[in-house]
Length: 129
Image (cartoon, rainbow, N blue to C red; front, side, top):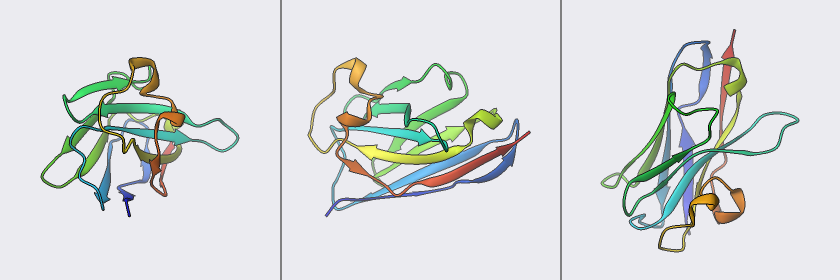
């Protein structure tokens, strides 16, 4: 059974940094799409960053470009999200997601939640002004 477990969330002041981790078990991600989503109270889920683990190609929402970086560690079967220059609008529950079907997605689908079929439980990020 595939499990995705996020960690690294917390409370920081604006301008600070956090690194989220998503440890995967029950499946080895080698040619899969993986992503980070977030959802703030009262708002729709938003795709933040995605990566195709087969090539390392990355995709970002405009709201986080230049501030966030997604990466993978194949040896640890772990996905990361480095978040710098955090702003209060980044406050949300952050979720790790994976597409268990091998192969790349069409580019427009990387930040769509319906493209993914495995999800973690989430980790909270709170940014204060």
